[in-house]
Image (cartoon, rainbow, N blue to C red):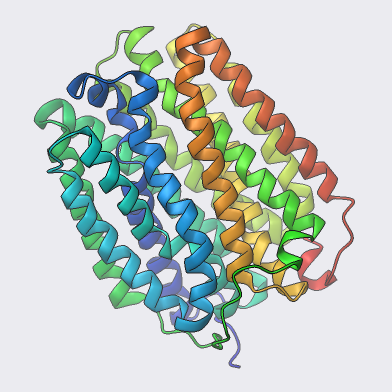
Length: 399
């Protein structure tokens, strides 16, 4: 096997740019309906909790398919699956823009989630195979930064365009962005050098018994569930409590670049100080941001969202990059472990994302914050527990 790409090499830069663009496209499409929830509720005459299913159906489709695409990539390769995922998801996104009714939109969003599963299922495994170990956490953080920018783009672009031209034009624009990013990834992403085909294993006992991996799966589920609960309900709070329009409410997602910076920075800090040291700090930062959103001042709420976003992407950037490293050290297929992590991650998103609408209807914003805080607390406890889990390979997993 050839040595992995090191910082400064042309292949390293191509990997960074391609995975960043792929992250933007995937997560812009995934979260493209979140800023539109109030408008979709009105357009289709559904409740706030029902409107959140336009997002939950996509995350359910993605999460379920991850259990197949991750192991499947052990046979067919990482890059082929990435390119197929980016292209198909953009085409299904165009179909979402012309959906004739609410049931059709939900079915198409589910199918879009299925198509989107290819990239997140293999991205961190690809990075582990193709990059020098000294830069893996750093580039994993950069990739998560691309997903953060994509999440912001999906919410911000759709919020602005829907107010001017309607939700259909908004969704079509995200599909166009996806096609552009798919073309960039096709041009830039280097072919695999460190990949060796092996028979796919869909259920590995070690992937489901290693205490560190189990803790990381649970952290992904709890942290993402809390994050999604806040952002799903925030649109309703901004339009009702603060009287903002859909476009203005969507502008709150401008805090997302903070997530890009946070994930990239946390990757560097993890390379330097260790993952076990950085992960609890991210949980603490997330909880602090949640508390700030309880204030009745719009600027303080925005600051709270920014702090929470920085904390969440610190947690996710470190945890998602840690999973394939820990799996490899424990002789578990990295792509399979990454699939389990992301399955848990999107299960948390789907379940809590929908429950947040119910919490908002019953108890308003304090109920949403209480719900999210409980799950952040669980993530924090597990991040501290990881500090006591035995290290498998000191050179890689102690961080």
